[in-house]
Amino acid sequence: MENTVLVHATIIDCTGADPRPEGWVVLEGDRIKEVGHGRPGVLPAKATVIDCQGQTLLPGLIDGHVHIGSVEASIVEQQRTCHTSTLIIKSLKILKETLDQGFTTARDCGGVDAGFRQAVAEGLVPGPRLFVSGRILSQTGGHGDWRLATETYPPVFHEGGVASGIYDGVDAVRRGAREQLRRGADFVKIMASGGCASPADEIDTSQYSLEEMQAAVFEAESAGKYVAAHCYSDRGIKLCCKAGIKTVEHGNLLTESSAQAMKDAGTYLVPTMVTYVVLAQKGAEYGAPKDWIRKNLQALEKGEQSMAIARKLGVKICSGSDLLGPMQVNKGMELALQAKALGPMGALIATTRTNAEMLGQSRNLGTIEPGKLADFVLVKGDPLKDIALFQDYDENLTLIIQNGRIHKNILTGGR
Ligand SMILES: [Zn+2]
Image (cartoon, rainbow, N blue to C red; front, side, top):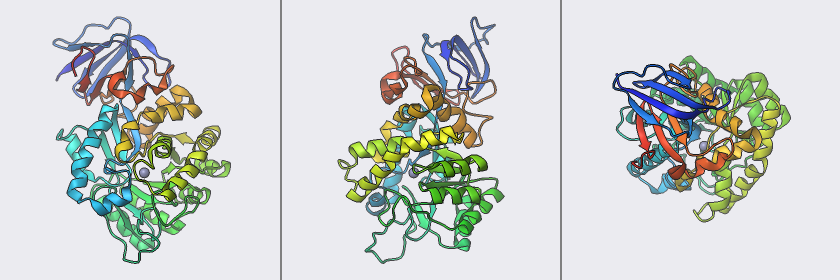
């Protein structure tokens, strides 16, 4: 078993403890063997020692909401204009860039399938450890129905990219969920409200009936898995909570009463603030349609307020980016946006410990503690003073370790 020892690190372990200077970590294979501070005891023979030069060591970051298969800004158009093979080839770059940004784990909320998870696990391509939903389930006229209101052809069941399909009625939703689970999905993703990119709905609507949601939840839970729901609206969020959906994605129109419903049901909120900010800045440049930009602004306006409400009512808050196409290089900006509501330590914990808990991976991920997987990010500077440092990841992330293997090390000048 290979041993690596990290020494002279300021450790923020993301358990909630204060940072500790002069920390050290002993790795054994892909796991953390020991963590301490001050003088390390007897180091394992033949250990590779990495001097962290006093920089801040964090657990590997987790992005709770990505679309690796979103290779262009318009997820709707890319499904029309790209072959599945092109979508896959282009997404490999996004996969690597996500790991380059310090995210050693990511949850893909629609699009890529279990094959991607396997390819990363086998080391065929560099990328974050993946948890995938496969194809998204949507109702007719829902956020996963990308036909224009003027188009009357039957819905298309997309494969690859940001794949979605139309499933109406309890039986169809049940079959859709079973289909994704059969194909190795880690969870089932449904569309429970309108969205920005879909041409035929508004964000303050609700989609799917309680019975349809319950069918998806029943099937997912029967397989030991769960349902994640794209949802903005108050009405949709309350239906999600009633149906037993585990995670509400985005949640930008959250009110005190829907936040209370989430708190009572133990539902996780996965805010994705950065995608609205970046779309507002760059959407037009990347060719996002006017209607999309209008709806994006509605979501952006309410996003911060919804985080504040969630925090006040004690909802479990995770962290995701949901960035699309070339905008995906901004994933690290989410931490700074979250910090406005949660403070820098709160943003770090949402991006590590709480995301790991949401994934059902508390035993393996999310904190620097003995027994967990050896995923680390070392950053130049103090993230508690400058949480925006993740944005310039090329410069500020000096060491990235995943499963005990070094992905990047510029501490000694090399890469
Ligand atoms: Zn999304």
